[in-house]
Image (cartoon, rainbow, N blue to C red):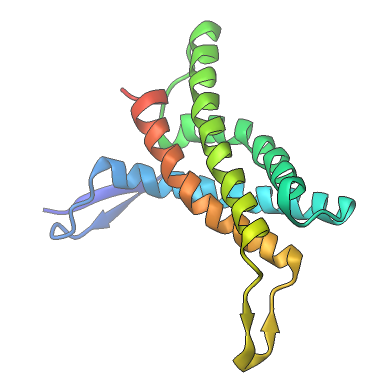
Length: 167
């Protein structure tokens, strides 16, 4: 027997020896949305960094908070419709769902900005002497943002799946 998973609206056949639980399919879709959101987040973050000249510490955490918040609305609707396949509801229920979503997202924001703050404040940019390569402060900010995103991705998926979009 073969398993099928939905990917971009098409059914993909997976060998039966490779069991694919529903949550794995959801996580993959969540990760795709997350990748797009991360790209948008980094575009906003680096644009703000270029405009302000800020690359570290509380200023970097503040810029990260702004960029992270900007993609939250897109994330809500994309995950609601595609990842967790939830239908639209009355405005009161939608507002309650969005409130739950934002509570989880703010938790992710705290994790995310905290990690950016810790890395940019207490860890020096990577220096690879063998190839004479040193990350610039702005690239170190982007690197710290990617590390932070990995942690908040796990937090957000668990919160969205089991609290916001549970069935």
